[in-house]
Length: 201
View 1 (cartoon, rainbow, N blue to C red):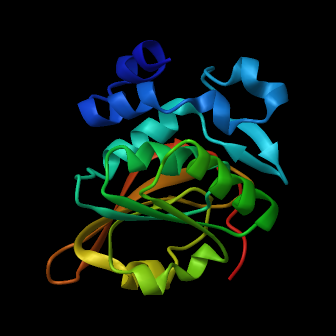
View 2 (spheres, rainbow, N blue to C red):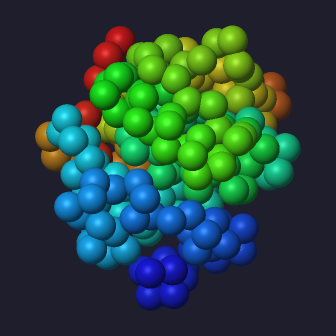
């Protein structure tokens, strides 16, 4: 998976590649899809939600340029796979899922697999996680038509945010948002993607 789906598509951060090799993706997909866990495609995880394809998980993680002391917020835990990957590169990950029927199993899964630096919660991630802010990096795993203002507020100066922007029912643009040390926010479109819609707020 890593060699042909990720390295061959120019993801080169050694820490990200090591995380992708280490995190057992098959443990984050429903049992009936486990034979497809390492294929280059998203998979359904219930409630209309998906686990992103491995390449996109690796690519988004690399774009955030995570360091070992970084604190990361993830909007949309899903099955917990992206949080697990990020946790192998960053210092701590705070992840929030709006569906309780996904949030509870994801938290249990992450705990049982030993991802002790991931803190998972049930709630509306549109509003961020104010008590744990500011964050060095924020990753949004659902499509929105705008960047949630609370996430910009909770992004540390010098921080990075990655989000799919555009209509939730068509192709979106993956956008890298940066906040400089003076608080100025810039956006840079990266690639076309397709994500499930952002819910809540």
